[in-house]
Image (cartoon, chains in turn cyan, blue):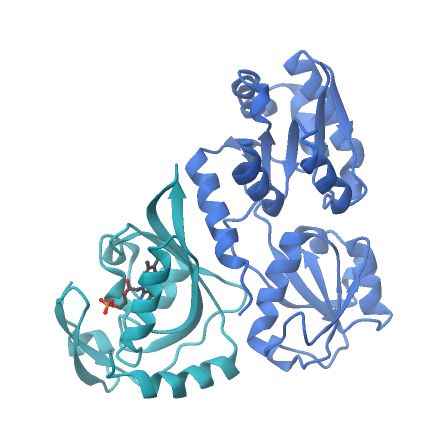
Length: 161
Length: 250
Ligand SMILES: Cc1cc2nc3c(=O)[nH]c(=O)nc-3n(C[C@H](O)[C@H](O)[C@H](O)COP(=O)(O)O)c2cc1C
């Protein structure tokens, strides 16, 4: 996964961050303070393997993330990680789904162009013949009240781990 | 042995004669007697599901999920180009112009169609609405949902998109779409009980060829299905995982 460059931002002003992911990989990203609203009536759907590598992405996912399907498939799902998201949220996600349970939460996602979009996400394990073979995530349009609450809550959690 | 065939009770009643013709076609091609059982509503269907009395069913996505995961039913085919989508509509003169305009206490006319109800409840979540802060009115069918809007007994109505688009002109013209789902990957499925054994492949073969003879083509037309396409087990598992992921309230 490559570092972001200024060219990704299409002329919008961006703030540089270095993200270190849970697997130790480090990447430069830029954050643009611009929200893209979740489209009405749509669902964003993707699947990963058991290691969190994206295996399928639907059209709404491609449209909202700003990446092409080819750029998403084969990459770690953390390609969307926004620095305003606390690490504990994703630790909880992985702890829950790897035990075969369903996880839900509000997530702020980073787009290819540095802008962001909020979702209400639900992640389920894909259990086949009694074994977890991957995960599916479905995101829907979140309530503005919940987004405001999570914005405040996540601010207090970022930086802790 | 007579096989029991049924259709999810959310079908448009104008296709009822068509489903009888479909049953006759099934019987001829399978070479065994088939009985078309029409259930009055989801409660009756769910009792029959619990009693394990259904052999072949054209099931809505919710029931399909349960039949496959809990009863081992086999997915035989799905209709081409016919995803289940939902519409939330208001009276054309309503002051509500967007989901965000909806307030707690909103009066909702709905049916007992589980997937449409779920999709529509998801589409009102952005307005902070949930089953605890709205007034819900159950109607027996979508025409009655529409009438509830026209009579101002409800502020919004939940519809299966295909049925909404099929409402008669005079009714349709007095309604306005607030939001329409574009999910694409949730659809009805034709399922068979595992006890059918080798007949399942035979059934699939006949369904995939159905449009190729005049009688089959006519039967398809009468239930408004273009053609059947085969589904593999993973397609179905994917749809079920999606349904499971969706059945959480925000
Ligand atoms: C099915 C699935 C979908 C996921 N979707 C997202 C997502 O949309 N955005 C995101 O930041 N992380 C998502 N994650 C979590 C990432 O795998 C990762 O944990 C997260 O981005 C934080 O990265 P880190 O754990 O390496 O720090 C998803 C995980 C799974 C299993």
